[in-house]
Image: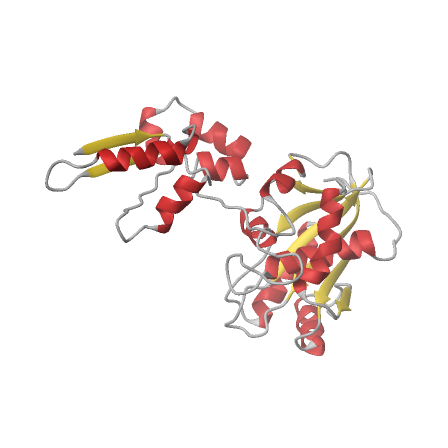
Length: 289
């Protein structure tokens, strides 16, 4: 009449065992089973989550909600080590993080390109901007990246904002450029280039702005940048969950199946890394982080 299936995501032959359990629930007025598990994206867990609201009820919990029953400092230590990473989002936040077939970036690839600190000092630093088409539209992607002494690019900040007026997101860009001592702001100019430049300069007159124009779709522009990750030439200093979710939703050959209507953060990342790693090289300067 009842069953409790624990850690179903780690069951060997999980689907066969689950089906046998279902066939055994044949007694009583309302046979039920409770399944508890870390939400790894195995077929059984994905299939059950897809039935949420029908004959399955999904509830989620975070490790922080259990702090009263854990050792002092455990949650803080885990968050410091794994917060925002794929493992942390799965194990600590209870998120089911799936891979998208045909995506330019995989979760494993991004994890391999993650570091806690930038070795030494950064040379050139840019702030890249993917402006929204309207004030009430998509988010404004703002990503900061720089080149290290080892020749690698390091993504060091996601300063993206949503729901802002042009003046609002321009101030966010100016703040990111000031905080990170950026050499240049690179802004996509397909949606009103003159307006984009004017609002950026209104926010900070001395800000060096370079306008870039997209002649190809977002996924096509992202492909050579994804290849830089495969070659180990780009690192993320820390974790950027919202940005990384968008990256993992860009499909090779075109298309986007990530969160939101458009990969604004990922597009800003592509502009930043294209400027640093795929364009003409500028003079490098040394700065302390």
